[in-house]
Length: 431
Image (spheres, one colour):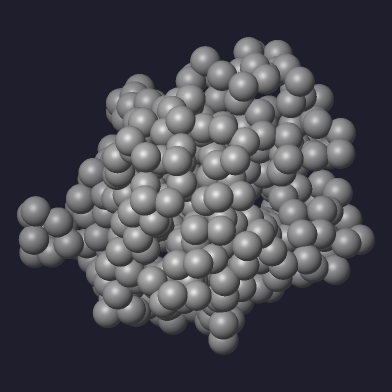
C-alpha cells in the first residue's frame, strides 16, 4: 500500500477544509488536503449553494468574520480591500432578508480554490477524487488515515489531522465520542431552471403547484419554495426539496440522492405545466451532491449551546464568531422558506475547545461537525462560520506541529493571537 507523509492532513475540502488547509500552509508546515469531489468548495461548489452565510451581523450590517472568508470575496472581486459592512458590497450581491452575500458564479469559486492551492504549492498539495475510508490509531493518536482513490488504498501519515468531512467521519472512526440527533434535519437537492420569465404572479402560483402536487402524492415533502434568481434574470435557482435521511449511512444517502433528483424533476415538470412563467423553461442541472445539514457532531472539550448564543457568552479562547439565525429545518412539508425558531442572536464567541474531540490527541474538527448542541449547530453550521472554524483549526494544527504538542494542550488564547495578527479570529478582535 502506498504511503504519503505530511505534517498536517486536512480531510475534506469544503468551506472549513479549504480554509484550514490554507491557514496551515501559510504557517509554513507541509499540508495535504484530500477531497472526494474533483474540486474544492464544498456546499458552494458540490451542492450549488451560492451564499456566504454567517458573514454579517444582520442588525448592524457589519462583517463579523474576516480572515480567509473575506479574502475569498476580495479574490472574487466582490469586496474591496477596505470593505467592512454589507453596504460596502454591490447591492445586487446582498440578500438583506436573511443577511447574506450572493456569489454570482459557483464555478468561479472552484477556480479560486484551485488557484489558491497552486499559489501555496510550496507547503500545500491536494488530492481530489480521494475519499477517507478508514483510520489507524495507537495510544490515543491517529497514526494513519486510509484514503481510496485512483492509486488504490493509500496510507497517509500525518502529525496532525483535521476532520472537516462535515460528518465527523475521521473522528468517529478514530474513537472520538460524537452524537447524532434522533431526528436530523432533512437533506436538500438544489437545482437550477433556465429560460424562466419571472413575474409577480409566479411565486404564489409556484407554491400552489407544489401544494397540489404534495396532496396528489407526487411530492413527498417540500418547503418554501426558495425560488431565487441568483445567477441570471431568467434562471431560477431553487432550494425546495426536503428529504429525511441519515447521510452517514451509505444506503440511506444513496436513497436520498435519488429521491432528491426525482423531486427536483417533479418540481420542474409541475411548474412547466402549471406556472406560465415556466412554460418555455428547461432543467439546467441538479447539484453534483445533495446538501447535508445535519449528521454527527463531536462531543468536544467545550460545547456550544443555545444559552451561549442567547447570553453572548464570551471566551478567552474564542477563535471565531457566529451570527446566523437558528436555521432549523424540520422533516416535514412547510410552505415557508425558513422554519424553526428563527431566533437571531447577536454575534457570539465560538471557543477553540469546540474543535477539540475527546480521546484523540492529534485531531481537530472544523465545520458543522464541531462540538455544538443540535439547536446551536443550526446557527454555526453555515458557510462563512465553517470557514472561520477551519482557519482556526489550520492555525492550531500548524502550531501543534511547531511546538510538538497535542492540540488539547495548546492555549487557545495563543491561537486567537495568531488569528488576530492575520486579521482573522473573533469579531471582538476586529481592528
